[in-house]
Each structure stands twice: as structure tokens, then as C-alpha cells.
Length: 238
Image 1 (cartoon, one colour):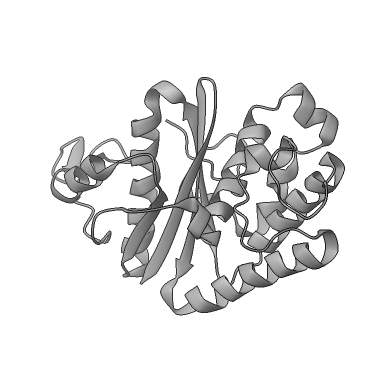
Image 2 (cartoon, rainbow, N blue to C red):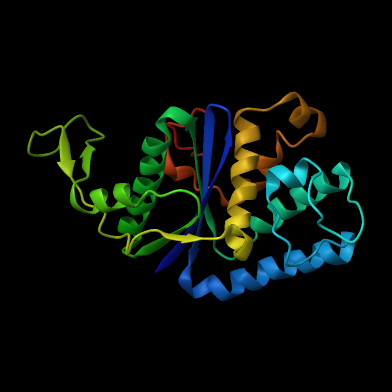
């Protein structure tokens, strides 16, 4: 059994998703790891342990995150530190997807399909937890019943170009949680934003260096998610 935490990051017409897939047996150790990360940030820079870290506010210098002001330089350093610690979550696999906002639902569907494929290969099940403020239940419910997949070889053995392969390894509807109450969703937010600025860097991102922060996640990126990714990082694309 796996638990998958998903969040997105958007900028104008672009949307990126990151999903942290964690074995249920490692969940408590993973939580303890994120708590230790926050305790380390408190010890080094006074960052409140229970304060939600929303990355756009974090790197924008906004929010009362500590007893005293935290410079953008220090926030950048801690952003990279957090990504490094996220990559150390026990047995985590990080899935990523990037595309235009107009195909957001299609992109989310492709992300979910890759998670389903992985569960089928591993002969396991997964439950998906997402940030509040969005709802993709209709997609997952449909995929459990009608989910036509094209053959990677042009056609299936029966000669058909597509085959109905219901997403039977994804249990329950998506669970929606307040990100302020979940270190895991906040971690997914950090990953999604790092992907957004890696794929679509701004002048400020380049100046501060966080256009390359996504590379910190390298060891835990699930590169098999999308073999056709031109960057060879497994980033799922529409």
C-alpha cells in the first residue's frame, strides 16, 4: 500500500504537479523525517515549526515565519535545504508533470495514470491525497470504469488501437486536505514550484539560482514515469 501526496504550482498559463509516493509502512518514519527537517530550520534560522510554508510566499519574502525577519538569501538557502531533505524521505518516489494550464485536467489524468501503472507493476494499491481548493474526483471515478489506453506498439494483440484498462489499483476518492495541516502536501508544493521554475524560469529565479533547485530532487525522481521526456527526468507532459 502506498500513500501519494499531490500539489500543483501555477504561473499564468503554465501548471506543474508533483506527487510524493510513500510506502504506507514508511509513513511514520517519513513524517518524523519532515518534523526533524522543520526542527532543524527552527534551530538554524528560527523558522516556526507549525507555520505553513507556502513556497510562493516563502521565496517572495512574505509571511511571518520566524520571530525576526528572514532574508530572501536565507529563504533561498532553506528552500534548497528543504528539497534536499524531501529527497531523503524514506523510499519516496517523486512523480512530476508539466504543461499548459488549458490542459490541466488532462495533465492530472496522465499523472494519475502513471501512478496506476506503477501500482499495477508493484502489485499494490495507492490512495491519493491532494491539497484543498480543487476537485478531480470525476476523473478518478471515470478512470476506474472507463480508461482506454493506446498501445505502445501501435495496436493491442486483438488488433484494437486502444484497450479499456480501469484504474483498479487506486482506492477511494481523492482525499483533500488543508495544506497548512500537512507537512507532506507542503513538501509536494516545494517540489512543484521547483519544477515550475526549472521548466519556466523567471529573471528573478535565474538571479537567485532557484531555477536549478529541481535538480536537488534528482535521486528520487521517478524517471520511468515518462520515457519520452526530452530532459530524461521522467517529467510527464500532455
